[in-house]
Image (cartoon, rainbow, N blue to C red; front, top):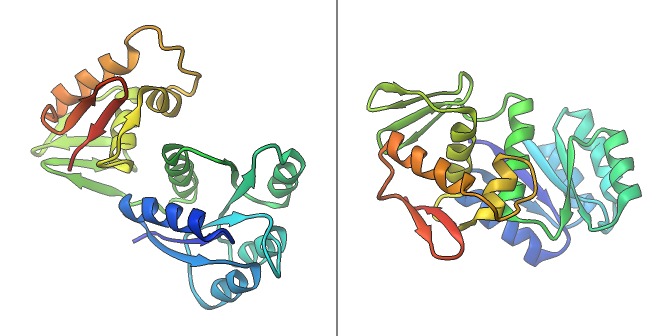
Length: 217
């Protein structure tokens, strides 16, 4: 199982992140200051670190040095508007940054992207009679390959990362298509309908009135 260290001194935020990552299938540990984080990094092995910059005892930049020494990728958690801190973190070797407050779907997508870059994602994911090989991007249903478009595949992964969670159409569009959702057109709805039909998920991907969709497992 993928193991993630969350380093955040605000306990409520740390617990919220952990809860959602655990729901998505990750194993998580918490550290509430930089010194505790450095000790954990020295003693244990992690696949990824989510790291706040402003921390007691040791700041995020100092903790990043510990992480780099053992080749653990880092995503910085930053307050909105801390442009200089973001740039400094990226120059020092962070893989990405997420500005607080953030959507959980965005957090999960960025975590998945970094893990995939480091080839640490699970290679095979199973759901009902569906099996996904994330290395080859091959999807099978009942042992037979299902031909999905790139967007349908990304949509499937988004639902899998957010099982039993309501996703706004805006969140779906921005996560899969990468642009700002204008509300015009039925791009999201049409792709969801095709995905449901191809994979037999009509009873599991449900529409939520005036919100979006949820994959119920």
